[in-house]
Image 1 (cartoon, rainbow, N blue to C red):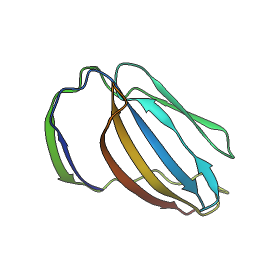
Image 2 (image 1 turned 135 degrees about the vertical axis):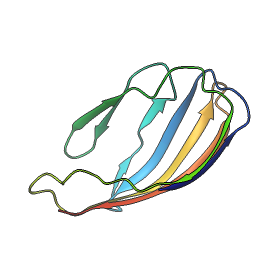
Image 3 (image 1 turned 60 degrees about the vertical axis):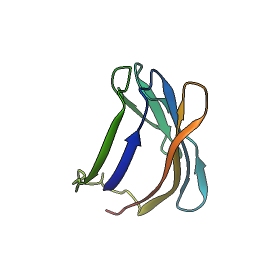
Image 4 (image 1 turned 120 degrees about the horizontal axis):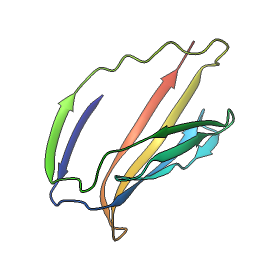
Length: 109
């Protein structure tokens, strides 16, 4: 994972929206608040819920640049090869875009 991020103003709230395609066919448009409340996403087809807390508000102005490797846990048995591709957009509290990026991932048993 490589990223560069430059948040020039403190964010008191906002939203992260994704526009993804699973296996190039199944649309998935998850959306979460950027801070302060739990986010629950429902993965299409398998209807699995994922809940997480993104962190406290406000998000301070910051500049991040890093590259990291993340090892994922073993895939559940019987999981078919799956891919996800699309874009992610960060909106501030007014709905204005403050950043965007792309996502490409694949999972295989």
